[in-house]
Amino acid sequence: MTKPALPFAEFVALIAVMFAMVAFGIDAMLPAFPEIARDLGLTDANQAQLVITTFFLGTGIGQLIMGPLSDALGRKTVILGGLLIYMAGCVMAIYVGSLEWLLAARFIQGVGVSAPRTVAMALIRDLYSGRPMARVMSLAMTLFVLVPAISPLMGQWIMTTFGWRSIFVAFILFAIIGFLWLGLRQPETHPVELRQPMRLKPYFVAMREVAMNRVVMTYTLAMSLSYGALFAYLSSAQQLYVETYNAGTSFPLYFAGIAIISGGSGVLNSLVVMRIGMRSLATLAYFVMLIASILFALTLYLWDIPLETAFYLFLLFSVISFFVPGLTFGNLNALAMEPMGHIAGMASAVMGAVSTLLGVLIAVPIGLAYDGSPMPLLIGFSVCSAMSLTLMLSNPKDA
Image (cartoon, rainbow, N blue to C red; front, top):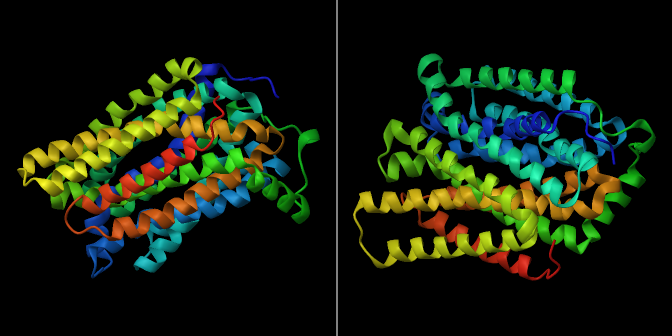
């Protein structure tokens, strides 16, 4: 294990920026859905959701490439190369004239941004393991949450001032910050003597080792279900706030408030994870999410409550929906990565790809089922939370 070189606080902040590339690339686009639909002549407004899910699709596929590349070429080289691909996709998106080309640009962006998202995990594993690794990730997630908090507001301001295509310029500027910070400040954590050549046989051997490890795949499948529910929420968020609950241009403000409140989950996790354990904390979080989803769904189904009351309940549900990932994602990633230190890049790639791609497959039908009410989303959350909880309970070994 390599000795950390950056000060701990700066390293956590840098990792938060790497993680935030994905969040910024998603959340800043949410207020632009109506403008995209009008500008590109979409007949079905739900199609604008594909701008989000296609991005996730590229991220999932890209992780299978970027993770192994980082084992062969080093962490920094791959992250910096991925950011260049991401910026190229952003430039392409500025000039597209159809939904098909926009989705192609978003796919390229997803492939590029998969590098900082995936390889940053391996970079952490190079320096930390076990509960200290979970602490690093929890603190990074606490800083990371500031990005989704301000992204919709920033996206809405950019869109109303310069047009929705200018949002991609902001993506480029943010990527440049990450590029320079990582390139100038973070030393390489994967030395040459530990690198593995990029050959097909070792690639598939390592992939098989990850796939055959019951602990790794149990936690990865639990994350997949969580991602599916969260992706579905993000895809439907703009329509739910604006069309269902008449939030109008206040949507980004509500979203920011929810993100800021939910950011406390990372702080809470970092404070109690060393005492309670990663698995126990994540299991409890899934139980709370399941109960909240079922109760909200039953309330809407059994009683005819006023729209304003329903909106407040939806906001409470949203806070819980964003609070739970702070108690699960970092812990599950750390649990799954613990036995995979010798192939951290491949492990991170497979875990990230499987969880993202399955998450997209789960999210698309839930998002497209939007019918003017939150019921499809609530049913999706209930099913995903129940299955995640079952997976957590199937592995009694605590950590």
